[in-house]
Length: 428
Image (cartoon, rainbow, N blue to C red; front, side):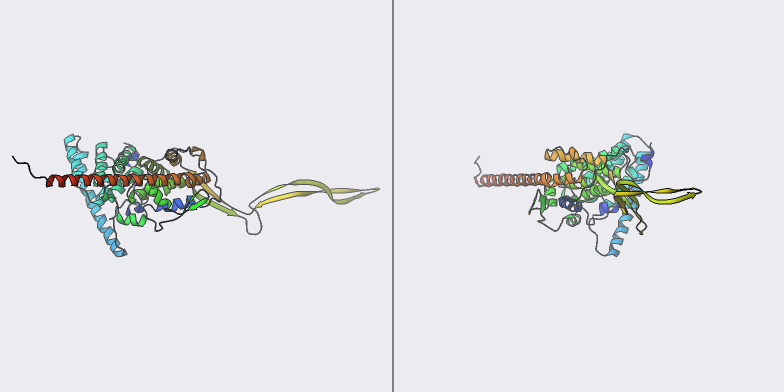
């Protein structure tokens, strides 16, 4: 077995799953950044040829905290302490199941019995322990974990599935979690999947923020609202996990998050993909000594030679002069007294997903934009947002028509039942 599978467990940042004001807030920032006036030009980053790496373990464990936490810090500590105690107890029980049903036997009946016991773990505190205990098991156990989490479909279960799809090093385990999330997105997440607190924190307060379209600012729904209406309805904790990975420095996790966005059709994540395909990863600067000394200079000019001085040279019966040549420079000098450098790191996986999704959504080949931020901003303002607004309107009209049809059918059924009840019973 490879060292990748036996390496320490990859753990998601705490903000991924706690839901403290995260959620769709990424769209609020990214959409406004793209809709801002275009006044600067940034160099397009060259594609990287570095090999794809496995996701690095994030700094903190995916402690799947309860959906709502008290405001008092002492109460929060108590809730977290109790939550962690339940997680540790669940980990002990899951290790016993692993020892009795998976590690010591390959008998299918025994393994099926162990898989059946997983269904009893519905407390959100046990989900992180499932990843720790079963990540190195055979595919049937990994599939059972993914199936169980999708059946529970609580906010914590959705966050755990998203964590697996982004951060797990085993590509098969990631694929299993992604397929379960695809099924939930297609069928519609149940109401239990949505965290009211996270959703309220993620929703911007402004309702009519103007969005830039061409050369006009048209008052209407905000870009966040347009994209949320055009895209699939998913829990806020899922989008929180996706944006945390796209915004992070782990290139492999960002690529996995981008592929998850494509698999689920998350239109609302397009702004974040644009921002994440090539971002500044660091910078440095330097300057002169403060006394007028330049750190670099370049001279452009013409040099003209002349006799700057004559030194007389005498001897017996003779006299002469020793000339000293000089040079006159006619031109300019470019002196650099201070400088700063920002390094842009390209993520080819994110860029490929962005080009594929954007081209399919708008019918426009966006591969020519490469990583030019100005070109992407113009496309976002002039093409993408207006088309997504039309898509949102069509989806709203379809929902209204479906609701009206269902109401008509219910009315007709009720009338038919009332008519049948009003007719006298036939005599034998």
